[in-house]
Length: 168
Ligand SMILES: Nc1ncnc2c1ncn2[C@@H]1O[C@H](COP(=O)(O)OP(=O)(O)OP(=O)(O)O)[C@@H](O)[C@H]1O
Ligand SMILES: [Mg+2]
Image 1 (cartoon, helix red, strand yellow):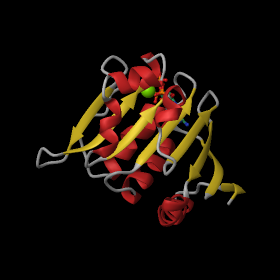
Image 2: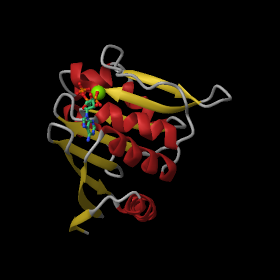
Image 3: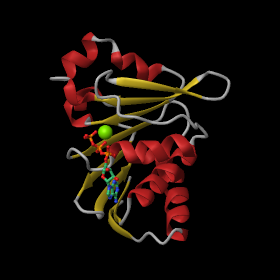
Image 4: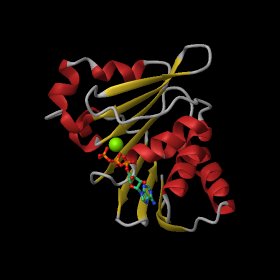
């Protein structure tokens, strides 16, 4: 497991981090996004979609809980959740949303703490905080994402991002 903290100084930088992670993930992977309203969870997901080679405009799924993004062949590749309006994990299961974890695509989940009992242990977890243009982003990569972690870090170091290790 790798955990690091970094600072994003612009929305573009947060999107770039998303893009780098989007290039490093594959079908079945889960990314969780937590942090206050307006922290940058959707901005990150916009970059994630781009990194995955999906070029539709990513918008907030707040009212639909989940938005699906297809590749150029019309195959859904990214499932973008916003569980803010769910009360608990029960709502998630009752709506059958856990079935998305079995689907052939990547799940990105805003406000994942609402459904924490339903989340797989293997995931990339982001926690975003801050205001103005500066965001502190803590990322935890579970063991399965060891290779992804190296790739992402290498890419972002080239973009001038600095990392502070919080633990392995
Ligand atoms: N460094 C930064 N990273 C991300 N967003 C930033 C940054 N600096 C400024 N912003 C601004 O913060 C806002 C982030 O909005 P975004 O919709 O991505 O947040 P969110 O976490 O998805 O919010 P919500 O909980 O309402 O879904 C945007 O208006 C963006 O331009
Ligand atoms: Mg959002």
